[in-house]
Length: 257
Image (cartoon, rainbow, N blue to C red; front, top):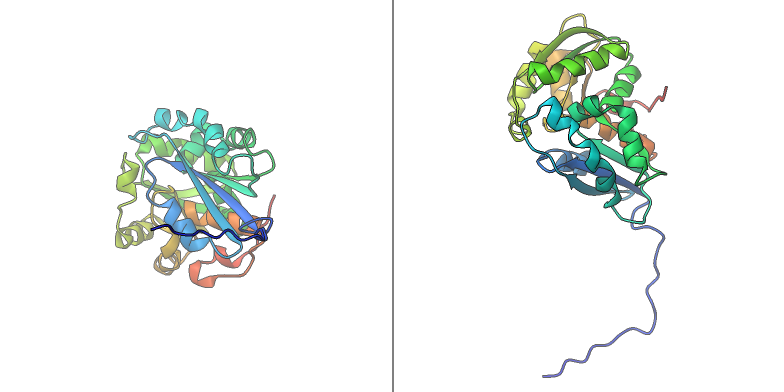
């Protein structure tokens, strides 16, 4: 049987972009959490999320984290090649400390020169400053060895660290499997009474979508890695509608220093 295929004589009308704003995510090969968080918190009719993964090998150690740096430019370049992105976010908090915010920005700009670059560490600092926090508590899933450079990073940014707690994990896939109940329990214990806010580090930890619950448990504003980057990406794309159900940070505008 011969099937007749009809081709329309009129070409379809093409709009300039499928989405008004484009956010590229450069994430770890082992990441279970960033994509679902950004799909839930950021993607909408105006904002498209485009993802590429870069090689990463556990365990989470300073050397393994630094080893990702050479992959960042190629990782960004493969997100919609030859097209512009409005924002590119590199999704690894501990590696951002090890590699450095400026080095990450340079690596991403080598592939996407016009994009705004977001890293979890710088986004967290901006978020904490926006909340008016000067004294903070910090909770990480890492070992003490991997946590120490992060403590030094936040201290260098001018924060007084009242309490710094870590869970001793070395596999980011396990970090992604910490139960919501335990995230809340550890957050409560990690928060010092005199702190202005709690920061929960690691893009693998599934804290971003339960921030309101953590804030209720701790009595403090709470920033997680993925909440900070999601908030910053939204604001850079012109999305400023307050979302109190997603935590205090999501009610605030972006204040760049």
